[in-house]
Length: 80
Image (cartoon, rainbow, N blue to C red; front, side):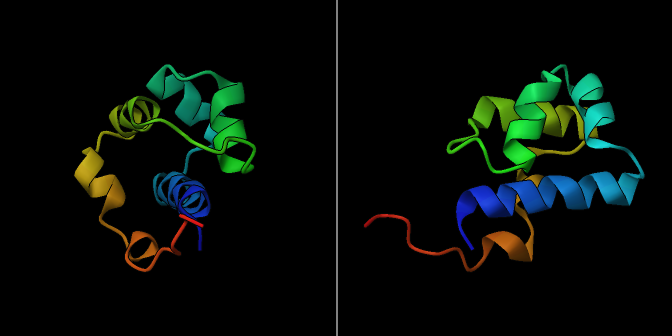
């Protein structure tokens, strides 16, 4: 799994756990709906840490909590 895929999957996982939509997350985090949709739909090649931090704020979790998931433990090597 690539990093962008893991970020997308983690956002969807956290939204599901909280029973909120991705669009609701965009409202809660003050990140544009198009940006969140681009991340979730893998159209963003590099979701920035500032954006991820805002999403974490909307989810009321820390960045450490966001990345504390099995999704991030065995990522593919991305340097070719």
